Length: 393
Image (cartoon, rainbow, N blue to C red; front, side):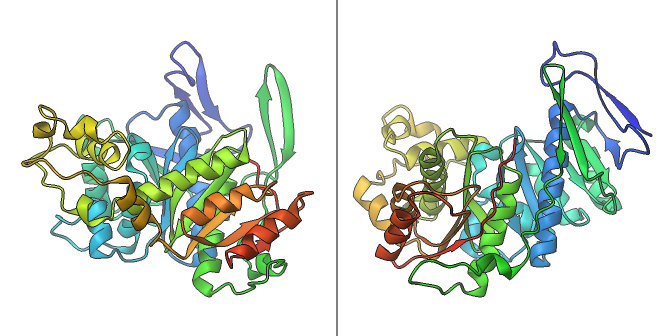
């Protein structure tokens, strides 16, 4: 097959729509459902991301995509009891495989953004992963293969319409890519930059030049994630997973703030007050996500006022005060930060420091590099100038 007809393009009025190969066979097979135009954009971008994460780390990887940017990306490290709880997988009665852990991390980092996501898996989708996917609101999944048990579960999801795509892991695209904008064809060489080597960390202009192995791994995860994130973009990573991604912002400081705020929310969800919230029985997962998001914000009274809290809690929780939040966020350390281009000013470093960033990888080359280096040195951060820009549009 070299063509798949689609229901419509980005919007229902954009017809006709299809994906096709100029020559040869499509490397994807639809095993279930009817994926749309945006589904395939998410699927093919996310597949490249997880394939490269696997190559860089040697571990199974997963991504959660929304609107052609990752909401989360992770490798399959085991989950602590706290992470199991905040990712809502503490109630399962089966063992989590490495690829299932990767998906739980990718989906769980920013659950608000991941609602209705498209999933990518670097390895075979097994039954454990399919059971996790079954519980979530999602549009579809792409993987190199599926076990029979997993496929049976996924084909039953969303009344049988869930999108399941299989991709040939051996597929290699042409080195030149094209796209059309306003009837004009753009052409460029594919971005084949290698982000797996430790040579990325050879140029370290900061006083602190120590990058432990875990930091190098996490910075590679950040950079590979950014390679498939709409620019401008910044990515915070901790312990093998993205915890905050700022995508598609016109200003880099806004990327850093947006991603930093998401990283703070990820960390605040682990606060003892959040972990002990007295939920009513059978509260829906999406309602729980939304309520936590409001509870840890400055608008907490929206879910704690009389007449409202009873919809979510058995008893009215005490608010998480601004002072408590500031104290808790200060305990987050060892965070890694990647940027898809240089930081133009030290204000980005100041903001990153507030979210526990200790290791940074960025292109370098700004006329204000001296200010950025000086700000890193003020906080004892280690920063590498990788000399690589990772714009993605």
